[in-house]
Length: 118
Image 1 (cartoon, rainbow, N blue to C red):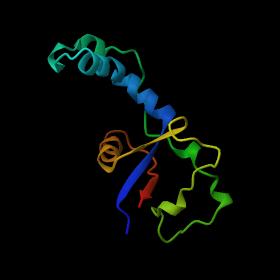
Image 2 (image 1 turned 45 degrees about the horizontal axis):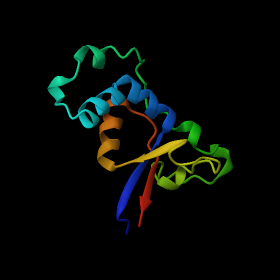
Image 3 (image 1 turned 60 degrees about the vertical axis):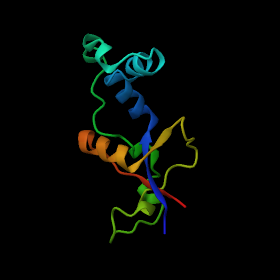
């Protein structure tokens, strides 16, 4: 059986999300400057100017459905979502844990693309 499962998230969507939540500002302030969360500027966090990222958009990573066999009896089967061969991890998509995916999916929705590791 599989040891771990991971979920694919579009790098483009992830970067939009990071801008929306002021990720870089928070990471720099808390991690690099070693400040407490209380020292964050709420104004900088809330007014990043970035647009809401919308639902997680992974559909552009998936092969056209006409180009492969789909298991129509099990629509959520991971084999129903093969990604394009020209994609590069970390450039075009990232892998997130089950917990991170559960949070992002509940908050933003979107196409689930699951992968397993042995």
